[in-house]
Structure formats: C-alpha cells, structure tokens
Amino acid sequence: MSSLPPCYAIIPARYKSARFPGKPLANILGKPMFYWVYERASKCKLMQKVCLATDDERIFTAAKKLDVPVVMTDPNHPSGSDRIKEAADILGLEDESIVVNIQGDEPALDLNMPRKLVEPFANPDIQVTTLARIIDSKQAENPDRVKVVRSEKGFALYFSRSKIPHIRDIEKKDTNYLLHIGLYAYRLSALKTFTSLPPSPLEKIEKLEQLRLLEAGMGVYVVMTDYQGFGVDRPEDLELISDQMKKLQNLP
Image (cartoon, rainbow, N blue to C red):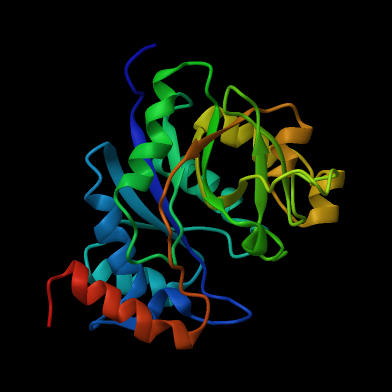
C-alpha cells in the first residue's frame, strides 16, 4: 500500500437533458444547482481541485460569475466520462492522477462519497472505483435501478438492469442485492483507455457504459456504502432538494 496520488473532482454540467433542459442552472436557494454541487465537493479535503466541465456558454458564464472553476468542453460527447477526460486534458492532469466524476445533479452530495471513492487508490493495483449499497428484493426488480454483483475481493463481476443474482432455488431465502451508485473515480491513465474504446456489445444491450470496462478486462472496485443519494431528475424534484439543502445550510 502507498499514499494517495493527487485527486481531482470534475463535475460534468451538460445543458441538454431530455427530462430537464438547463438543469445545472436550476435555482436552489438563490444559486444555480452546479454551485451547490461544487461547494459540497470542495469540502472534501482529499481533493486538490474541483472543476466544472460544461458544454454551454450560459453555464460557463454563470460559473465564472460565482468564481467556480470551469472549463468548456465539446458539446458532442456521448457520455460524462468523455467530458471529464477532456476536462482533465485541459487542466493538464498527469496520468497518475485520480479523477473523480461527481454527479452534477446531487447538490446535497454526502461528503463521505468522494472520500470512499478515492481511498482504495492507495493500492496501486486499483484502476477504477465505484459505489454500491444493499437494497431489498422488491427494489431490485426495478430496471431503472442498476444492480451489481462483486467478487470476494470486491471487484465487479457484472452490472445489470435485471435482478442479479437470480435465485434459482425457490426454497432458498432471499439474498442481498447491491444497487450500483453511479459515482466513479479513475486513474487518469485508465480513464484515457476507457474513453478510447468503442461501445462494447454488452454495453449496447444493457445501455450501461460501465460494462465496457468489464468487457475490456478493466477491474472496477466496488466500495460498499450506506449512502442514499437524491439526484434531481425533474423540475418537481427541486422542492424536496431545496428542503434538504436548507438543513445542510442550517436555514429555517
């Protein structure tokens, strides 16, 4: 085991969204949502720098006004992983750096999440990390909730929208199911390899980008957590997240 390499958090902030266009600019307690994500991520002491990566001049300008570090990236990236890779290139990060992909729609980000993601990189063999928590059988039936199974050493064996593992013996008691939480950290060298690969067969079938890593033989270490995040998917989610933010800010 060794000490941690330098760690950087990058927040993809894309303007277009089928369910919520302009979501990063949504007003929460008088400031755009991206500001709160940045503020929370900046409180993680393991991060040397936190930066926004956007594709839109409106977001870029708003970030500059609020003194939020921001870089402009290609609007045609197929995924957030491609966007953070370009941002890392713009920032001039070295290949041994750890890059954390922070969800841009979680303004109430739990500060333990970035820490849990980067701590395993003290082991030089770890290339990619992500998170999972236990859910019950009923929750696991939802195809919008991505499940993961992992090895005894903690590495992902498979991710699926299906309920995995499948219990064949109906007399067997139910098992624990693991919900995949879509936060990732990468060694920059691994991120560059990942984004250079074409979409893989299983990725196309399940519509899950992380399967490209497994099909390429890149290990994904799954960190267990009790965290239950709340992302803003639709405009109607703003009222609930505003209430959560008031509690974090100790506001009435």
